[in-house]
Each structure stands twice: as structure tokens, then as C-alpha cells.
Length: 411
Length: 222
Image (cartoon, rainbow over all chains, first blue to last red; front, side, top):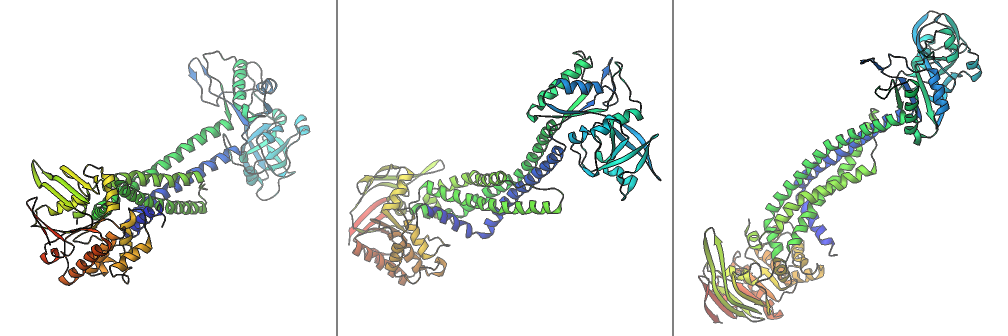
């Protein structure tokens, strides 16, 4: 037998001769490692899911909405003021670099009637670029064209919920609906899409902004600018998102004549910023889950130490015999340390398999997707072996320091 | 082979001290067969432990094969035990969960490495070639002691120490053990130091050293 192999065999014999005790020790580690892997993978899976939903909105998207303004110490609630104008949107498009498309929107609530069906719906006037900016998919029909926009055609595209409510299963394309006092024609239906930041497009009716302006009176600011509900835009280079946000902030503060002591009267949200914030938050959550699981791993480690101390005590005579046969302190030390590492490595490997199975079955339930990544597995296994070495160190040291004569006399 | 010069051993017992060995001077030549006799508590086991490098003297010097070993570190003493000394204990001291063969291999474990053929040869030498895979609990006392002898001699140590090797055996098995030990001495020229209470056994030896109260009282050559 090879010389390096002998301590391993000795440790193996030590493990298998105390099957029940070894398996209980291993179980402690298995639970710890499995908990770490399962919780971390659920945490990671959940945050990946949330992030992909956010990035589905388009990571190049920036939304500007009217914010709280304060005049004379009176702060209005966000969104209750009307500070953004169509002219702001034009100025942004002209003066800020790295922007591909800008679209002002104006929303209002209108009574919509089709035959016997009747609902109050949000109607949003937008330019045709809005479809591309918000990455809206068309389920049937088409979106309105530049031509229809320019001549203010009274055509609408329905959100999927609106279509469901007004038309049920029948096709709405080409149908006429009454919206307030006007009759408009349906030319398209949107694919259902998750909403984020404000209402979902599913509950909205889209109409060319030009047509909207003929149908409802668009309010104006004190400077005579046409007020809009929000401005959405996409950046041409996502690396420049921060620069674009800064530039827009400066430009709008200038245009709104905000002195240095006044807060912004608008809010700028970029998907990139949001996804960074969210991924930071979910990362913290994942770490927290991992930390809770790590406590059980620690408890398992203390179990290993406990067992090793008992094992040393019980095998005092064996240690004495080995010393009489010429074992040095480090031979005894290595024997018990390897045995502890052995137990925790076995626990680590079984724990990885168990944790992986748990997260697989969690995925199968469809509640959350889970991601078992290599770094978690490597971390969990090396931590469990580390725990074995750490908590095995003291018992092994105790064993190695035994006086051979006293050890031989032990019963 | 062994030279003990003015060896004392004092154990601290709380505030008092217990003097176990009071100035031992003793020479044992290479190839000698020596019996140590004396009443319980006379210090003979303590001296055997010192000779076997399991313990160090409080004062005095001990030369083993002309090397001063009484001041070595515990690691160096372990190396001396591994290479030079074979022990046979009254209570056998086999590892209960290992087979006879594995117990014998353990004797080589810290002395340069395990060699299964040599372990088999050692077991054959003590007449246990048909019991290699038995565990100690499946062997009689005499057989267990023979496994222990095989374990001690498998690394070919120049010095074999036996502390009442027949103390736990009936007279027939005890006789077998003594004949194995004496024949090892006769055939391989091994130096053998043996503690015994049995004068019959002591008379198989070349020299008898009598202990009393931590001192050598008489030495007689048989």
C-alpha cells in the first residue's frame, strides 16, 4: 500500500466501524449543506425571474413622469401636478445625446361603449414610436402608422384586457367603438404583457396623440406648453444611461426654471437603474437565506466536534497503542483530522445531492424557478470540509497530546 | 545495547512527590535475555516504560545503542519506538475492530510502511497462518498474545520488551508464549527484556534482575 494512502484507510475504518454515529454526524452536515444549496438556489432563481421580467420592459427604457413639486413649503403628492410638456419632450429629443426615440404620452379616463358593453378605460395618446419604445407586440391587426398619426386618424389599439371585456371572443378589428363623444375604429390588439411602473398596457387603449388632442382638451402650462402625462424614451447606448439621466435632469430643471433650492418637479426612472436596485435587493435576500442556512451548517459542524471529542475519549487506548507502536503526535492528529474531514466531505456531497433534489422539486411545483449554480455547490462543499477541519482540529489536537502511558492504561 | 545511569523517576502527586525509581544503574548487552522480577509497585513497569521510550526519566541518562535518548522530544522518541522497540503487553492491546493481519500491519504503519507479505510471514512465525482474518474477539487469549508478538516483531526491532506477557494466560498458553519468545531470542538474536512474576519463566532467561522500592536489589545470572 502506498504511504499516503494509509491515513485515509485508517480514517475510513474509523468511520465505518461506528456506522450509526458517523451517519448521524453526516446527517447534520447534510441538512446544513442541503439547506444552503436549496435556499440559495431558490433565492437566485427568484431574483433572476424578477430581473428578467423587469428587463422585458427593455433595459434601454427611461420613463419621465411628473413628480412632486413644492411651492412655498407645500408639497403636492407625486403625479398630482402637471409639469411635463410636449415641448419638454421635443427639447430632450433635440438636445440630449445618446437618445434613439422619445415619445410623449397623454392619458385620460374615458367611457367606452360597444353595443351593450360599457366600461371606463384608460386611454393613452401616443406617437407611433411608442410601440417600439415599450416593446409592445401586436396580437392581431396592426399598430397605427406615421401617416395615421400625422392626419390624426381616429383609430385605436386595444390592450388585451380591454379587448376581452368589450368584445370577448369575437374579433374587434375594424369594429367601431364609442369613446366619450367620438366614434373610433379598432385596428389592432396588443399581446398581453406584464406591467411595471404604472398600469399594464393590457388595461389601456392606445390612440394617436394627434387624435387625442382633437377629442379632449389638453391642458396647458402657464408658459402655454401642452401638458403630457409622461415622456418615455430609449437610449441608443445603455452604457450612457446615467449620462442621459443627468442631462435630462439638468435640461428639465432649466426649462422648468427650478432654482438651486427647489426639488425636481419630475421623476426619471431608468429600467437599468431599477434592475440594479432590484438585483441588489434580491442579492441581499439570497444572502440572508444563505446565512440562515449557514447557521444550520454551523450547528452541524459543532455536532462533528462533539462526535470527534467523544470518539477521542472512547479511543484513548487505541491512541496509546498507536503511540507505543511509534505514532508521532502529527500521525494521531492527522488521523482524527482526516476522519473529521471525511465525515463532513461525505455530508457535503450527500447534502449537495439532497439540496439539488429539493430545488428541483421546488422548480417542478412551478412556484419559483431555481438556479443551482456551480459556485454555490463548490462553496457549500468546501465550507463543509472547512468546518470538518476547523471543528476537528481541537479534538485531534487533544488526541495527539495524550501521554502514551496514561492512554494505554485507559479502559 | 541499554545503559541506564543513575536514573530517577519522580511523579508529582498533588503537593507531594512520589519517587518511583531511586537511582538505577543497569547495563543490558545486545542479544541478552533478561527477566525483571519484583513485587507490585517496585517500579519495574516504570523502568520498562523508560527503556521503551514511552516515558522520560526525571534525572539520569539513558543510552540506547550508544545514543542518549533521555532528553529527546516526543516526536524523536516516537521515531525510536517505531524503529527500535517492540512491545508485548500483559493485556495484549490489540485493536478489537481490526483483523489479526491488520493488527500486525499496524506494527509497520509507523515504521516505514506496510508490507502485507512480511505481516503474513510474522503471523506464520507465531503459528497463526490460518487465523489471519479473525478479529481479536474470535481468538483465544494465547492466540491474541501471539498476534501481539507478531505485531511487535514484524518490523524487526533490535529490542523486544514484554510486560508480564503471560500474566493473563493459563499455564499452557503461557508456556507457548514463552517458548515463542525464547526461540525468537535464540534464532534472531533479538534483545529481550521481560517482566514476570513466574520464577519458572524467569529461569528460562540468562539474567534475573530483582527490584524492590525503586532500586535494583540483586542481579543473578542463570
